[in-house]
Image 1: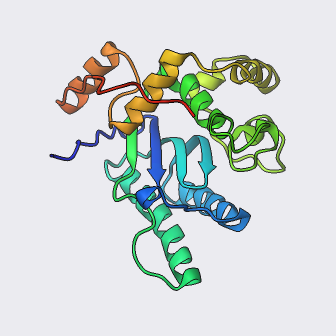
Image 2: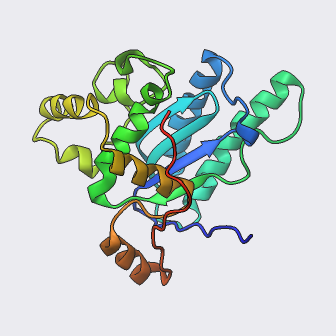
Length: 229
């Protein structure tokens, strides 16, 4: 079966999913999570990547980011990020081999879908049952977005910025938004798009991407809808 072709739009938001190889655990303790965050912060500046949302659970990472203008920028950034984690774990555990799936998954995101992507990513720890309070879950961008951390290096996306004229009002509106479950159809669209290397957007977005890349990507369903955790 041929590999699904990855579409990268330089300077445009993308939803990224990276999983542990064979769903193995990637983060085994707070130190692993913290080091990944340190790498994420450093490398986003090195590769001129804007980071809009993120969350981590024991065997996967979700990112909403905008890569730089080079067509290879996204792959180089993700390769560097994954390599650091792999080298560290292999050295600590005196092992060899891969830690991550061979390919990270990605989906270009239309502007109208940025806010649902923020919601999907930042509420996943709640969805997966690894926390019951997003405010206190340290491995997600939600506390940073809400001003609950000492540092703030999150790049707000256009969907979030459109919520209000100032950060106080945006935070209030977003908190109300994320406290409600994401619409089932929106959740399914975001979830399936990143799994299948499709577009997170409507048919008009598909037309725009086709005009830019010469490639037509239609979001076709396959099999049963995914079960929500």
